[in-house]
Image 1 (cartoon, one colour):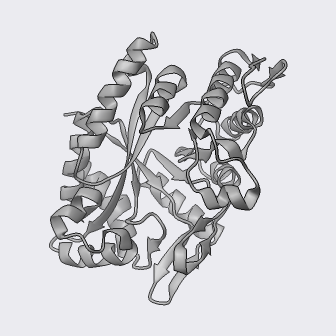
Image 2 (cartoon, rainbow, N blue to C red):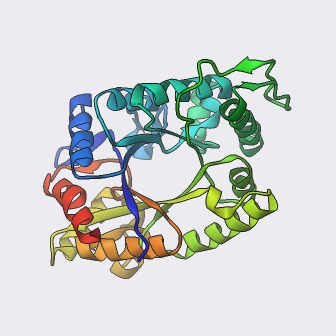
Length: 324
């Protein structure tokens, strides 16, 4: 049976009876250490200046690259990755330099995950262009690929123009370059330039992953690359319950993720894995059989960790044990 590794999607806050509270760095570091000790492959963090949470107002968190660098410096084995950096937040040549630096700091454990961006209020607040996001990412991806592969780039595009940009010093180990992609143009960019691909967020319904993975394989072949040159990964929202605790898990999921609150249990499970470790592990094996080598696990709604510490024990320790 195909194996699948586990990545932990970190949240910057915790949801308790008194509402949300920010998690201090030392708490995030403790969670990273626990995941490392439990044998998890990687930890991941999103890239947002803020998220506009509607009536709840704007929700901020640590800057992604800075947090990953600090976690890398104080861990030993676990990989650190961005899920995903917003392309237009950083100049791509500077981003390549940042990734190379983090690769050296981490001893080869960094993964650069890049996306086109989606949250328009951030762009408005920062005065950044929101147009042609996929085309802008295509130019960035071409330049980053060239910088990683050759150490220099004079890429000339519509928005990006480089003149003998140098990636110096180059890291001892090349940085894996991953792209998050769903639509046809993003999949084509991934097929042409990326070392890895992520699609998210899912529950029991593996159909979207299978469909897009097949499309990506065809596009990779059309680009002259073997399909297995691209690591396939999937983002999954999950709440691991105690055996027999599914109903409590459904109730908590509906509180953490209001967008699924009106769904019945079966429909909710298609979006979020709610069940004990054996149930969740069984679904992850289905993703592995569909080609995923890594499942990045986020809590329901992705906004905050549950305050109950039992969920973390079940996720970080019971789930790997159930996967064997």
